[in-house]
Length: 294
Length: 242
Image (cartoon, rainbow over all chains, first blue to last red; front, side, top):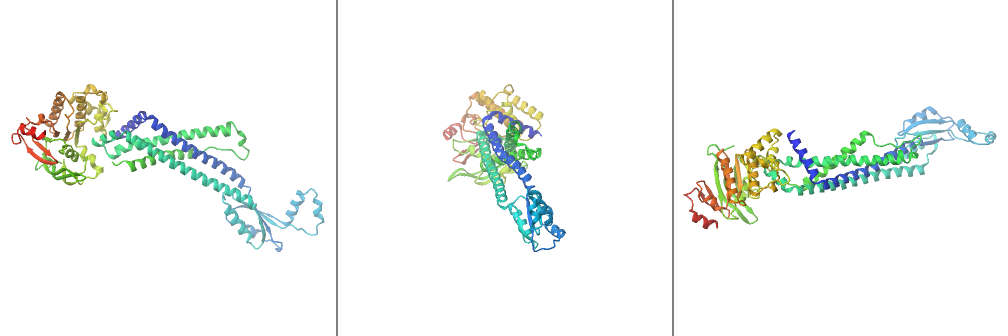
């Protein structure tokens, strides 16, 4: 407890004595977290749109004309057992004809047909949690391989493009986030090094009067974690301000019946601030490990 | 921790210290008894400061053995140096005070490193400042004090941790005669209260009339070791030092 009071006093004094250095570090952390979190926020909202859209993804599997009697229950069970299937609906030949008659303006044309040319089919709804194009393709090819099925349709082209875009976007977010964290670590470690150099005499004297290496180092760690915390809070506050301005205050058009843009949950905010504090700690660790021999 | 049989608080055996090819300390063997006031003298570059640095592990020795208050410095891990330094008070010619901290905080630092409660720190620091007669400057910053006053702060810092040994490296080197006499008296008081003092100086006037043991170093080797009248006369001392 005595040590803690002593450390906190030292950290406070240091913040007061070198305000510029600390302000720059805090703003760097805030900016890095702001950009990374903005990407993250954009990503989770886009992901939500994608999720809603994916609820509508379906695969049409047509029964082969050579199959005279479809064992509907057996096929449904078989298809349902495949990975990624949410629900399945059987459309008999008769139902298909009825749908067509209802859709066509001149439905009586179909009454002249000698036999129903439409095949029976299964409408398969994919689980919204299936997030890769490959999974949907694998599911379609598994259905295609069934002897009773002659053809499978699932909008391959645009589905491929959208899922590829989402994958690319996800990788970009992770890459930019990683780069920003590395930059932040570099800035923090350099700031701590500058503070250390500016206090070199003081640290030497502390060592001469019997201070342990931890007595000397801990204030630097506290300082870095406090910088991380303040930077994190500032970054997220700015992000919330921008989010509020863009979505709620200025452009409510973003909000629809199906989609409401949302900010990070308290849980995620907590994790982001911890991440920011962890970045501060790691930057300090790198600096002290690399440049300080105590 | 003391070598009780011989009452020796510092033991040095065949100590060498090299900087590159140069021997700064060469085959130095000597002991310091508990509660002894020992002068270490010699011309500039004789190895006085290096010898003191070896004693507080400010430098690692190249060869030999040093035991200080029961701690073997050669075997000591760098991480445990604080254990040694908490048993020693160090005074420098250039005071080594933290200019951004008040006099009180400078002295308190020694006790803060030990994790003492704030109230006890306040009591001990005030006692140390009163002891050296500068309690009125407790809230002043070192640069606002004279050299003599700053050195008294350094003495207060050295004694505040209640060490068994004080290593003083030219503590009067940059002071006027009156201030030097005050510092010497303060170290004398510490000695009388049971402490051991190693006082490095090249000031001939301090040692020529002393009845205390004087160790003379020259080019890193022990030149003479004894008490007047067993050592050289003052004339001889002057020739030697100058």
